[in-house]
Length: 442
Image 1: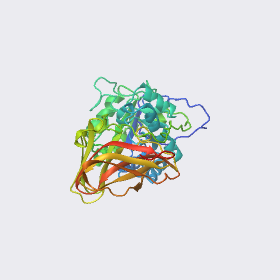
Image 2: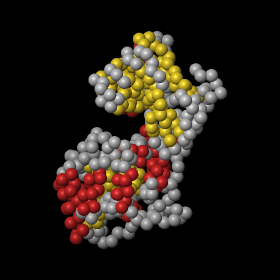
Image 3: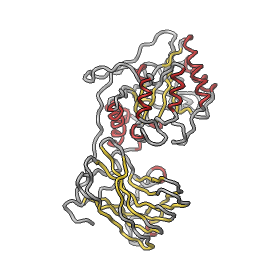
Image 4: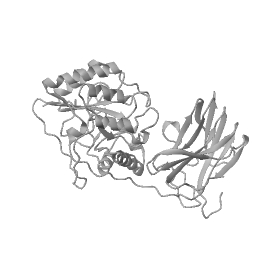
């Protein structure tokens, strides 16, 4: 039996009190299932959704809810339009977390908080996909614990850019419902013939093929499949029903009721007088050639370059060996900085509303700098809050610090960075964030 299914939202939701048990849809002879799935929820995918709808096809859109409404991503209205058209809305972590590289608590927050937000917006969110296809047994258990009925990998079936030793397709009763097999990410390298071959080759060897369409728009370093190729494929796919090819969403294949949303673990604020930052000395390396738990951030029209340098540049007596250097060139507008990663708690310190925090670092600078502060709310959204007065340039290493106003009600975490808003260089190290409530400020 062959069936082709597109991944989309829809289907009845049973009472949340009923125990969720994954139930696969029985196969009917001569039916092959194909699912069209889309990762990340970028704005360009709305055009693909409209093309699908014009051909009577439905698919599954896996959404990073923390990016909804951001530049280049779908907004809330877009998600509702998907659901209204019968498309399925599923989860893809809150902010595209590389789950195996995160601590257990942060990984579970990324999965669970994403589903909490999507269900709070009125979507069932019973299907999940792993960012970058990265997972392991512990991560799979988290997807189940967060209430998802299934979770999709990628690059785990044979075919173009796929796994040479893997099966050609998945089965409608998957070997592992929390690691269902799918193609590699489909991008501009794929032709219409490649897509047709993927369907035909899988049809003879399995009962369910999940096609994975990537983010596109080069947001994540990939170019989307050309619109004309996607439209030609949808037209061809819609014509395959006469020979038993059926396009269905992931939820339609997996089935099962919608389980209650489950919140992830929380991170407690550091006690007063204790440095709340992770890796404050920048000594532990992390991803993207940045120190662990730190990220680069910029906006406006300018060029910024981040690098690590010897801490001896700041002072022979400074602790550790690594400092961070930020160079801004061709400045026109905006700013650039490094700051603790804007996540759900692994790197961004929790705060207590009403308390004041002393923020600081040792630095040298060839231009004026200041501390910019960002707060995260209960919904997981980061927003700019306030900034310190300006600090003058200094060739000698200076320990700058500044006490924030009382943290406003509703804030749950804080991140900050020394910025450059003109051409210049900034070298920083030995960061601190200390709750000064009841103790002297450093």
